[in-house]
Image 1 (tube, protein in one colour):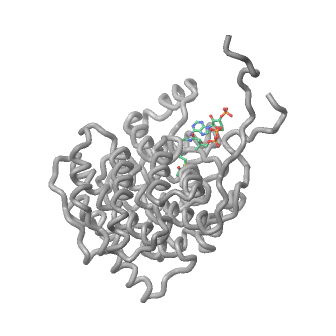
Image 2 (cartoon, protein in one colour; image 1 turned 180 degrees about the vertical axis):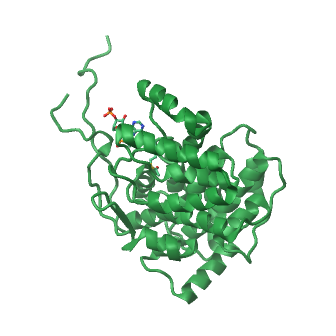
Image 3 (cartoon, helix red, strand yellow; image 1 turned 45 degrees about the horizontal axis):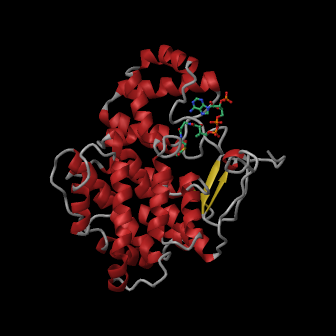
Length: 374
Ligand code: ACO
Protein backbone atom coordinates (compact mmCIF):
# COMPACT_ATOMS: atom_id res chain seq x y z
CA UNK A 1 0.00 0.00 0.00
CA UNK A 2 1.25 3.47 -0.83
CA UNK A 3 0.90 6.30 1.68
CA UNK A 4 -1.17 8.32 -0.81
CA UNK A 5 -4.26 9.78 0.86
CA UNK A 6 -7.31 7.97 -0.47
CA UNK A 7 -10.61 9.83 -0.67
CA UNK A 8 -12.96 6.88 -0.47
CA UNK A 9 -16.18 7.61 -2.35
CA UNK A 10 -14.52 10.83 -3.62
CA UNK A 11 -15.91 12.43 -0.43
CA UNK A 12 -14.97 16.09 -0.32
CA UNK A 13 -13.10 15.95 -3.64
CA UNK A 14 -13.77 18.78 -6.11
CA UNK A 15 -13.27 17.23 -9.55
CA UNK A 16 -14.40 20.04 -11.87
CA UNK A 17 -16.33 23.29 -12.12
CA UNK A 18 -19.99 23.58 -13.05
CA UNK A 19 -22.28 26.52 -13.80
CA UNK A 20 -25.45 24.42 -13.65
CA UNK A 21 -26.26 24.23 -9.95
CA UNK A 22 -24.82 25.17 -6.61
CA UNK A 23 -25.43 23.07 -3.53
CA UNK A 24 -24.57 24.94 -0.36
CA UNK A 25 -24.89 22.78 2.75
CA UNK A 26 -23.86 25.66 5.04
CA UNK A 27 -26.83 27.81 4.02
CA UNK A 28 -28.94 24.75 3.17
CA UNK A 29 -29.61 26.13 -0.29
CA UNK A 30 -29.74 24.87 -3.85
CA UNK A 31 -29.49 27.17 -6.86
CA UNK A 32 -30.18 26.19 -10.47
CA UNK A 33 -28.21 28.61 -12.67
CA UNK A 34 -28.37 31.07 -9.76
CA UNK A 35 -32.09 30.76 -9.00
CA UNK A 36 -33.18 29.26 -5.64
CA UNK A 37 -34.92 25.97 -6.39
CA UNK A 38 -37.82 26.95 -4.12
CA UNK A 39 -38.53 30.00 -6.31
CA UNK A 40 -38.46 27.88 -9.44
CA UNK A 41 -40.75 25.30 -7.84
CA UNK A 42 -43.18 28.05 -6.85
CA UNK A 43 -43.34 29.77 -10.22
CA UNK A 44 -42.07 27.78 -13.20
CA UNK A 45 -43.45 25.06 -15.45
CA UNK A 46 -41.11 22.07 -15.60
CA UNK A 47 -40.39 22.80 -19.26
CA UNK A 48 -38.98 26.23 -18.27
CA UNK A 49 -36.72 24.62 -15.66
CA UNK A 50 -35.39 22.17 -18.26
CA UNK A 51 -34.73 25.09 -20.60
CA UNK A 52 -32.96 26.99 -17.81
CA UNK A 53 -30.68 24.05 -16.98
CA UNK A 54 -29.70 23.57 -20.63
CA UNK A 55 -29.41 27.21 -21.74
CA UNK A 56 -28.42 28.98 -18.53
CA UNK A 57 -31.36 31.43 -18.69
CA UNK A 58 -35.10 31.14 -18.19
CA UNK A 59 -36.93 31.20 -21.53
CA UNK A 60 -38.87 34.22 -22.76
CA UNK A 61 -42.56 33.54 -23.46
CA UNK A 62 -41.72 33.00 -27.14
CA UNK A 63 -38.79 30.68 -26.42
CA UNK A 64 -40.89 28.64 -24.03
CA UNK A 65 -43.75 28.32 -26.52
CA UNK A 66 -41.34 27.22 -29.23
CA UNK A 67 -39.70 24.64 -26.97
CA UNK A 68 -43.06 23.34 -25.73
CA UNK A 69 -44.24 22.83 -29.28
CA UNK A 70 -41.06 20.91 -30.16
CA UNK A 71 -41.27 18.82 -26.99
CA UNK A 72 -44.90 17.87 -27.71
CA UNK A 73 -43.94 16.78 -31.23
CA UNK A 74 -41.29 14.38 -29.84
CA UNK A 75 -43.45 12.52 -27.29
CA UNK A 76 -44.73 9.54 -29.30
CA UNK A 77 -42.86 6.27 -29.02
CA UNK A 78 -41.48 4.33 -31.95
CA UNK A 79 -43.49 1.06 -32.20
CA UNK A 80 -40.21 -0.80 -31.73
CA UNK A 81 -39.94 0.64 -28.22
CA UNK A 82 -43.31 -0.88 -27.37
CA UNK A 83 -42.18 -4.19 -28.86
CA UNK A 84 -39.05 -4.02 -26.74
CA UNK A 85 -41.07 -3.41 -23.57
CA UNK A 86 -43.37 -6.30 -24.53
CA UNK A 87 -40.39 -8.61 -24.92
CA UNK A 88 -39.25 -8.00 -21.33
CA UNK A 89 -40.06 -10.43 -18.50
CA UNK A 90 -43.23 -9.43 -16.65
CA UNK A 91 -41.39 -9.31 -13.34
CA UNK A 92 -38.54 -7.11 -14.59
CA UNK A 93 -38.05 -3.98 -12.50
CA UNK A 94 -39.33 -0.81 -14.23
CA UNK A 95 -35.84 0.73 -13.92
CA UNK A 96 -34.49 -2.14 -16.04
CA UNK A 97 -37.15 -1.44 -18.65
CA UNK A 98 -36.46 2.29 -18.68
CA UNK A 99 -32.70 1.76 -18.91
CA UNK A 100 -33.16 -0.66 -21.82
CA UNK A 101 -35.59 1.64 -23.64
CA UNK A 102 -33.19 4.59 -23.38
CA UNK A 103 -30.46 2.39 -24.78
CA UNK A 104 -32.67 1.51 -27.72
CA UNK A 105 -33.32 5.22 -28.43
CA UNK A 106 -29.59 5.50 -29.05
CA UNK A 107 -29.87 2.90 -31.79
CA UNK A 108 -32.55 5.02 -33.53
CA UNK A 109 -30.32 8.07 -33.60
CA UNK A 110 -28.87 7.46 -37.06
CA UNK A 111 -32.23 7.97 -38.77
CA UNK A 112 -33.65 10.39 -36.22
CA UNK A 113 -30.91 12.95 -36.37
CA UNK A 114 -31.47 13.59 -40.05
CA UNK A 115 -35.25 13.75 -39.70
CA UNK A 116 -34.99 16.25 -36.83
CA UNK A 117 -32.15 18.33 -38.18
CA UNK A 118 -29.86 17.47 -35.27
CA UNK A 119 -26.14 17.87 -35.71
CA UNK A 120 -23.76 14.95 -36.08
CA UNK A 121 -22.49 15.67 -32.59
CA UNK A 122 -24.27 13.08 -30.52
CA UNK A 123 -23.81 15.03 -27.27
CA UNK A 124 -25.97 18.00 -28.28
CA UNK A 125 -29.24 19.65 -27.27
CA UNK A 126 -31.43 17.86 -29.85
CA UNK A 127 -30.83 14.55 -28.07
CA UNK A 128 -31.49 16.12 -24.68
CA UNK A 129 -34.88 17.41 -25.83
CA UNK A 130 -35.72 14.05 -27.39
CA UNK A 131 -34.89 12.11 -24.22
CA UNK A 132 -36.84 14.66 -22.16
CA UNK A 133 -39.93 14.22 -24.38
CA UNK A 134 -39.73 10.44 -24.65
CA UNK A 135 -39.16 9.48 -21.02
CA UNK A 136 -42.66 10.29 -19.66
CA UNK A 137 -44.20 8.23 -22.46
CA UNK A 138 -41.86 5.33 -21.66
CA UNK A 139 -42.52 5.54 -17.91
CA UNK A 140 -46.30 5.80 -18.39
CA UNK A 141 -46.22 2.81 -20.76
CA UNK A 142 -44.26 0.77 -18.20
CA UNK A 143 -46.76 1.69 -15.45
CA UNK A 144 -49.81 0.79 -17.58
CA UNK A 145 -48.34 -2.53 -18.74
CA UNK A 146 -47.73 -3.50 -15.10
CA UNK A 147 -51.45 -3.05 -14.52
CA UNK A 148 -52.42 -4.82 -17.75
CA UNK A 149 -53.99 -1.63 -19.09
CA UNK A 150 -53.97 -0.40 -22.70
CA UNK A 151 -51.48 2.34 -23.44
CA UNK A 152 -52.60 5.95 -23.74
CA UNK A 153 -51.10 8.13 -26.45
CA UNK A 154 -49.56 11.49 -25.51
CA UNK A 155 -51.77 14.58 -25.88
CA UNK A 156 -50.26 17.65 -27.45
CA UNK A 157 -52.82 19.94 -25.82
CA UNK A 158 -51.38 19.19 -22.36
CA UNK A 159 -48.23 20.49 -20.72
CA UNK A 160 -45.47 18.09 -19.65
CA UNK A 161 -46.76 17.38 -16.13
CA UNK A 162 -50.42 16.98 -17.10
CA UNK A 163 -49.58 14.84 -20.12
CA UNK A 164 -47.37 12.58 -17.97
CA UNK A 165 -50.26 12.00 -15.53
CA UNK A 166 -52.80 11.65 -18.35
CA UNK A 167 -50.75 8.97 -20.14
CA UNK A 168 -50.32 7.12 -16.83
CA UNK A 169 -53.87 7.24 -15.45
CA UNK A 170 -56.16 8.23 -18.32
CA UNK A 171 -57.57 11.03 -16.17
CA UNK A 172 -56.24 14.15 -14.54
CA UNK A 173 -56.18 14.70 -10.79
CA UNK A 174 -57.03 18.08 -9.21
CA UNK A 175 -54.95 21.07 -10.26
CA UNK A 176 -53.41 21.04 -6.77
CA UNK A 177 -52.28 17.42 -7.24
CA UNK A 178 -50.85 18.16 -10.71
CA UNK A 179 -48.91 20.96 -9.11
CA UNK A 180 -47.46 18.64 -6.46
CA UNK A 181 -46.18 16.44 -9.28
CA UNK A 182 -44.69 19.44 -11.12
CA UNK A 183 -42.98 20.63 -7.91
CA UNK A 184 -41.44 17.17 -7.39
CA UNK A 185 -40.04 17.20 -10.93
CA UNK A 186 -38.50 20.64 -10.44
CA UNK A 187 -36.89 19.53 -7.17
CA UNK A 188 -35.56 16.31 -8.68
CA UNK A 189 -34.19 17.96 -11.84
CA UNK A 190 -30.63 18.72 -10.79
CA UNK A 191 -28.18 18.34 -7.93
CA UNK A 192 -24.59 18.98 -9.05
CA UNK A 193 -22.11 16.07 -9.03
CA UNK A 194 -24.32 13.38 -7.49
CA UNK A 195 -23.49 9.75 -8.32
CA UNK A 196 -25.68 9.46 -11.43
CA UNK A 197 -24.68 12.83 -12.86
CA UNK A 198 -21.03 12.08 -12.27
CA UNK A 199 -21.50 8.73 -14.02
CA UNK A 200 -23.01 10.57 -17.00
CA UNK A 201 -20.07 12.99 -17.05
CA UNK A 202 -17.55 10.15 -16.92
CA UNK A 203 -19.18 8.53 -19.96
CA UNK A 204 -19.48 11.87 -21.81
CA UNK A 205 -15.79 12.52 -21.09
CA UNK A 206 -14.83 9.63 -23.36
CA UNK A 207 -16.74 11.48 -26.16
CA UNK A 208 -19.25 8.67 -26.23
CA UNK A 209 -22.88 9.63 -27.04
CA UNK A 210 -25.67 11.15 -24.95
CA UNK A 211 -27.77 7.99 -24.82
CA UNK A 212 -24.87 5.94 -23.46
CA UNK A 213 -24.20 8.57 -20.81
CA UNK A 214 -27.88 8.60 -19.79
CA UNK A 215 -28.06 4.79 -19.72
CA UNK A 216 -25.12 4.80 -17.30
CA UNK A 217 -26.80 7.48 -15.21
CA UNK A 218 -30.04 5.46 -15.02
CA UNK A 219 -28.02 2.51 -13.75
CA UNK A 220 -26.42 4.65 -11.05
CA UNK A 221 -29.74 6.19 -10.04
CA UNK A 222 -31.33 2.77 -9.57
CA UNK A 223 -29.35 2.02 -6.42
CA UNK A 224 -31.17 2.52 -3.10
CA UNK A 225 -28.37 4.70 -1.74
CA UNK A 226 -29.29 7.16 -4.52
CA UNK A 227 -32.56 7.44 -6.50
CA UNK A 228 -33.83 4.01 -5.52
CA UNK A 229 -34.43 5.45 -2.06
CA UNK A 230 -37.81 7.01 -2.95
CA UNK A 231 -39.11 3.51 -3.68
CA UNK A 232 -37.42 2.13 -0.57
CA UNK A 233 -39.06 4.82 1.60
CA UNK A 234 -42.48 3.50 0.61
CA UNK A 235 -41.46 -0.06 1.44
CA UNK A 236 -40.29 1.11 4.87
CA UNK A 237 -43.54 2.99 5.54
CA UNK A 238 -45.53 -0.09 4.49
CA UNK A 239 -43.36 -2.34 6.64
CA UNK A 240 -43.94 -0.14 9.72
CA UNK A 241 -47.65 0.11 8.91
CA UNK A 242 -48.84 2.63 11.49
CA UNK A 243 -47.52 5.39 13.72
CA UNK A 244 -47.83 3.29 16.90
CA UNK A 245 -45.31 0.81 15.48
CA UNK A 246 -42.58 3.38 14.82
CA UNK A 247 -40.81 3.18 18.19
CA UNK A 248 -40.42 -0.63 18.39
CA UNK A 249 -39.62 -0.80 14.66
CA UNK A 250 -36.90 1.85 15.03
CA UNK A 251 -35.48 0.17 18.16
CA UNK A 252 -34.97 -3.00 16.15
CA UNK A 253 -33.76 -1.26 12.99
CA UNK A 254 -31.16 0.79 14.87
CA UNK A 255 -30.03 -2.28 16.84
CA UNK A 256 -29.53 -4.10 13.53
CA UNK A 257 -27.68 -1.04 12.14
CA UNK A 258 -30.16 -0.79 9.30
CA UNK A 259 -30.00 2.25 7.05
CA UNK A 260 -33.33 4.04 7.12
CA UNK A 261 -34.14 4.97 3.56
CA UNK A 262 -34.98 8.60 2.84
CA UNK A 263 -32.68 9.89 5.58
CA UNK A 264 -29.13 11.19 5.36
CA UNK A 265 -27.16 12.80 2.58
CA UNK A 266 -23.52 12.91 1.52
CA UNK A 267 -23.50 16.70 1.19
CA UNK A 268 -26.28 18.00 3.45
CA UNK A 269 -25.70 17.16 7.08
CA UNK A 270 -28.28 19.55 8.60
CA UNK A 271 -31.24 18.90 6.33
CA UNK A 272 -31.85 18.73 2.58
CA UNK A 273 -32.66 22.12 0.98
CA UNK A 274 -35.44 20.56 -1.12
CA UNK A 275 -37.32 18.87 1.70
CA UNK A 276 -39.39 21.82 3.07
CA UNK A 277 -40.86 22.49 -0.40
CA UNK A 278 -41.63 18.82 -1.05
CA UNK A 279 -42.92 18.34 2.48
CA UNK A 280 -45.43 21.20 1.93
CA UNK A 281 -46.44 19.63 -1.40
CA UNK A 282 -46.98 16.25 0.27
CA UNK A 283 -49.26 17.87 2.89
CA UNK A 284 -51.57 18.97 0.06
CA UNK A 285 -52.01 15.35 -1.04
CA UNK A 286 -52.31 14.05 2.52
CA UNK A 287 -55.12 16.50 3.19
CA UNK A 288 -56.82 15.91 -0.15
CA UNK A 289 -56.77 12.14 0.38
CA UNK A 290 -57.73 12.26 4.06
CA UNK A 291 -54.92 9.77 4.82
CA UNK A 292 -54.42 10.73 8.47
CA UNK A 293 -52.82 7.34 9.11
CA UNK A 294 -50.06 7.96 6.57
CA UNK A 295 -49.63 11.57 7.70
CA UNK A 296 -49.10 10.40 11.30
CA UNK A 297 -46.74 7.59 10.34
CA UNK A 298 -44.67 9.94 8.16
CA UNK A 299 -44.47 12.60 10.89
CA UNK A 300 -43.69 10.21 13.75
CA UNK A 301 -40.96 8.33 11.86
CA UNK A 302 -39.28 11.60 10.92
CA UNK A 303 -39.48 13.05 14.44
CA UNK A 304 -38.27 9.84 16.13
CA UNK A 305 -35.37 9.21 13.72
CA UNK A 306 -34.14 12.80 13.79
CA UNK A 307 -34.37 12.85 17.61
CA UNK A 308 -32.41 9.62 17.97
CA UNK A 309 -29.77 9.93 15.25
CA UNK A 310 -29.68 13.62 14.25
CA UNK A 311 -29.91 12.47 10.60
CA UNK A 312 -32.42 14.45 8.56
CA UNK A 313 -34.77 13.42 5.74
CA UNK A 314 -33.68 13.86 2.13
CA UNK A 315 -35.94 14.61 -0.85
CA UNK A 316 -36.88 10.96 -1.27
CA UNK A 317 -38.64 10.91 2.11
CA UNK A 318 -41.55 13.22 1.16
CA UNK A 319 -41.56 12.37 -2.56
CA UNK A 320 -42.07 8.62 -2.02
CA UNK A 321 -45.44 8.99 -0.23
CA UNK A 322 -46.40 11.83 -2.60
CA UNK A 323 -46.03 9.54 -5.63
CA UNK A 324 -47.95 6.85 -3.75
CA UNK A 325 -50.84 9.24 -3.14
CA UNK A 326 -50.78 10.33 -6.78
CA UNK A 327 -51.47 6.68 -7.63
CA UNK A 328 -48.15 5.40 -8.99
CA UNK A 329 -46.89 1.90 -8.19
CA UNK A 330 -43.94 2.05 -5.82
CA UNK A 331 -41.60 0.57 -8.47
CA UNK A 332 -42.40 3.56 -10.74
CA UNK A 333 -41.09 6.17 -8.29
CA UNK A 334 -37.45 5.95 -9.40
CA UNK A 335 -38.36 5.99 -13.12
CA UNK A 336 -40.16 9.31 -12.44
CA UNK A 337 -36.91 10.53 -10.89
CA UNK A 338 -35.19 9.49 -14.17
CA UNK A 339 -37.65 11.54 -16.23
CA UNK A 340 -36.97 14.59 -14.04
CA UNK A 341 -33.19 14.18 -13.64
CA UNK A 342 -32.59 13.64 -17.36
CA UNK A 343 -32.69 17.44 -17.55
CA UNK A 344 -29.76 17.84 -15.18
CA UNK A 345 -27.88 14.85 -16.61
CA UNK A 346 -28.06 16.17 -20.15
CA UNK A 347 -27.10 19.69 -19.06
CA UNK A 348 -24.01 18.19 -17.40
CA UNK A 349 -23.25 16.01 -20.41
CA UNK A 350 -23.24 19.11 -22.62
CA UNK A 351 -21.17 21.07 -20.12
CA UNK A 352 -18.65 18.23 -19.90
CA UNK A 353 -18.53 17.98 -23.68
CA UNK A 354 -17.99 21.73 -24.10
CA UNK A 355 -14.91 21.74 -21.87
CA UNK A 356 -13.81 18.16 -21.88
CA UNK A 357 -11.02 16.33 -20.13
CA UNK A 358 -11.16 12.55 -20.00
CA UNK A 359 -12.12 11.58 -16.43
CA UNK A 360 -9.58 9.02 -15.37
CA UNK A 361 -8.59 8.98 -11.70
CA UNK A 362 -5.79 6.94 -10.14
CA UNK A 363 -5.94 4.10 -7.68
CA UNK A 364 -3.56 2.91 -4.97
CA UNK A 365 -2.66 -0.72 -5.61
CA UNK A 366 -3.00 -3.00 -2.58
CA UNK A 367 -2.78 -6.41 -4.23
CA UNK A 368 0.00 -9.02 -4.41
CA UNK A 369 3.57 -7.90 -5.06
CA UNK A 370 4.92 -8.78 -8.47
CA UNK A 371 5.23 -12.56 -8.78
CA UNK A 372 5.71 -15.03 -11.59
CA UNK A 373 3.81 -18.02 -12.87
CA UNK A 374 5.57 -21.12 -11.42
N1 ACO B 1 -29.99 5.41 8.34
C1 ACO B 1 -29.20 5.04 9.37
N2 ACO B 1 -27.96 5.49 9.53
C2 ACO B 1 -27.49 6.38 8.62
C3 ACO B 1 -28.26 6.81 7.54
C4 ACO B 1 -29.56 6.30 7.42
N3 ACO B 1 -30.34 6.65 6.41
N4 ACO B 1 -27.54 7.67 6.81
C5 ACO B 1 -26.35 7.78 7.40
N5 ACO B 1 -26.32 6.99 8.51
C6 ACO B 1 -25.21 6.83 9.43
C7 ACO B 1 -24.26 5.77 8.90
O1 ACO B 1 -24.62 4.48 9.32
C8 ACO B 1 -22.96 6.24 9.47
O2 ACO B 1 -22.91 5.87 10.83
P1 ACO B 1 -21.54 5.39 11.50
O3 ACO B 1 -20.62 6.58 11.38
O4 ACO B 1 -21.94 5.05 12.90
O5 ACO B 1 -21.07 4.23 10.69
C9 ACO B 1 -23.06 7.76 9.42
O6 ACO B 1 -24.47 8.04 9.48
C10 ACO B 1 -22.49 8.34 8.15
O7 ACO B 1 -23.14 7.72 7.05
P2 ACO B 1 -22.48 7.38 5.67
O8 ACO B 1 -23.33 6.36 4.99
O9 ACO B 1 -21.03 7.08 5.85
O10 ACO B 1 -22.59 8.77 4.99
P3 ACO B 1 -22.58 9.02 3.47
O11 ACO B 1 -22.35 10.45 3.29
O12 ACO B 1 -21.69 8.08 2.75
O13 ACO B 1 -24.10 8.58 3.13
C11 ACO B 1 -26.13 8.26 2.15
C12 ACO B 1 -25.02 9.28 2.46
C13 ACO B 1 -25.58 7.14 1.29
C14 ACO B 1 -27.23 9.00 1.39
C15 ACO B 1 -26.69 7.68 3.47
O14 ACO B 1 -27.17 8.73 4.29
C16 ACO B 1 -27.77 6.65 3.23
O15 ACO B 1 -27.48 5.50 2.95
N6 ACO B 1 -29.07 7.07 3.31
C17 ACO B 1 -30.17 6.17 2.99
C18 ACO B 1 -30.39 6.12 1.48
C19 ACO B 1 -31.02 7.36 0.93
O16 ACO B 1 -31.98 7.87 1.47
N7 ACO B 1 -30.50 7.82 -0.21
C20 ACO B 1 -31.04 8.99 -0.90
C21 ACO B 1 -29.98 10.02 -1.10
S1 ACO B 1 -30.66 11.57 -1.63
C22 ACO B 1 -31.19 11.34 -3.19
O17 ACO B 1 -30.77 10.49 -3.95
C23 ACO B 1 -32.31 12.30 -3.65
